[in-house]
Amino acid sequence: MKTIGILSASFAALGLSACVSLLPEGGDLSPRLTLDAGAPRPAASDMLPVTLAVADPRSEAIFNTSNVAVLTSPLQYEYLAEAEWTDRAPLLLGRFLERRFENTGLFGGVGDRVAIPVSDYTLQTDIRALNLDRTGGQRRAVVAYGARLLDRRGNTLGSRVFQAEQPVDGAGNAAAVLALNTAAQRAADETIAWSEPLVRQDLRNREANPRSRGRTDPLSD
Image 1 (cartoon, one colour):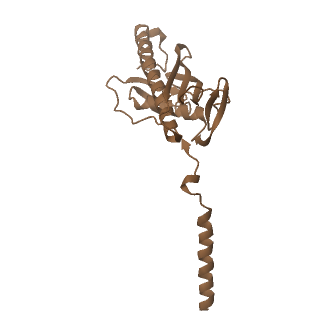
Image 2 (cartoon, helix red, strand yellow; image 1 turned 60 degrees about the vertical axis):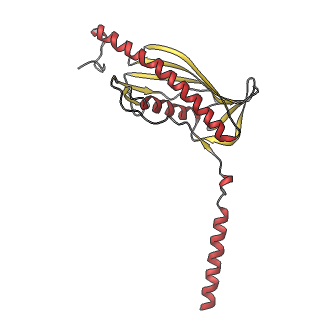
Image 3 (cartoon, rainbow, N blue to C red; image 1 turned 90 degrees about the vertical axis):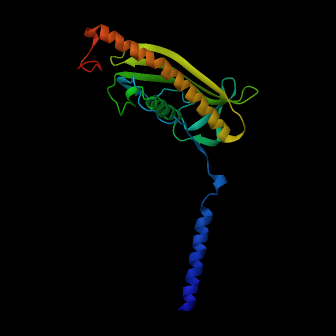
């Protein structure tokens, strides 16, 4: 009985050793990159009493993937071999913009089309670039998208293309994702600075022209 017990313990230890050996080493794990929207700020004293829906961005197939696109020559893309996004790039950018807007504390409510199916304003975007660029002397991150701000009736209040670039300072994934985050944050902040006065002007126009208000107007009692 003692011999059987020793053999059983030996086989158990051997099996445990085999299982442990199947786990990947730290260096074998494929990095997953994301975009950080930063920390939220307190609600602004002049917060806009409106809701903003951030629609999922549109994009070409080259960006509609979890692969990280790299421009290697004019009009030619490849994918980063050693890392991926945490989600498909359009969904990742959409959530990033939603959180970046929400973190400002400027809007009464911010969400996607699922969270806010009927909103006072809608931000639509079309991705032009969300990639690393190796065509020049130094690697750089490029984030660019067309933006359109709509009121609740679908009227366009304004449209503009935003683009931000950031040199990749260093080698490896850490330097690349830092540059992508810096470029994305700069583009998002420019979008917020552009959107806010458009919304405020639209609200002033509605105050001046009560007939333009609807039942869901944020200024209506």
